[in-house]
View 1 (cartoon, rainbow over the protein chains, first blue to last red):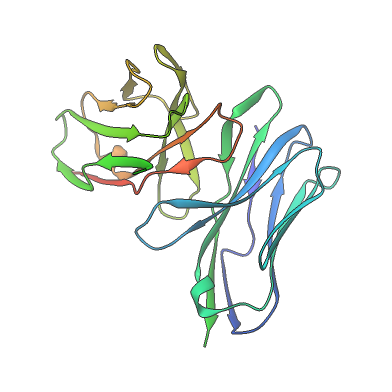
View 2: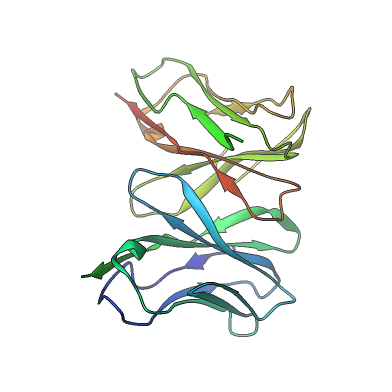
Length: 113
Length: 112
């Protein structure tokens, strides 16, 4: 069974710190990987999507990388702000079922002022 | 554009009751899907559709029915609610299913 894992489940950092969120997946036949942000009581907002042919994607202070051989993706947040506090979820789709996303359970990030 | 909308926001049901969760999108997306999110877990795919008249099962389809008569709407039906269906339900859409997914605000369902 294809699985996506996010560790740690929760993370607190002081404002201004650069941080990395981790996502691992069990199947190297990945089609793409998406990072989402979820605020309490809200839906998910897509942050970045990396195709299997890509190594990384960047948007503002966010940079996501993909390493298929090691089964890992990371989301790098530069110069964190209290407004970055949210739960971050990664989701992968795999070859053969590219339209079906498999989600990790998320990392709850708190950026302390 | 309203994006993806879901109604109701919150619903309480008794065991055995039926209800329909509504989902609509105004982006002319062909692909729509339903997920459930339980505490401490990621989202799990219930059903999805790649276009009007076409639906398929996801990871956890039991107890749920769907149909897709129009591009815009993708309702999720619970025929006989069970406490195990207490969850937050999210609807999502995208052009073809492999691009950026757009999520609705969710429906919180409590089954007593």
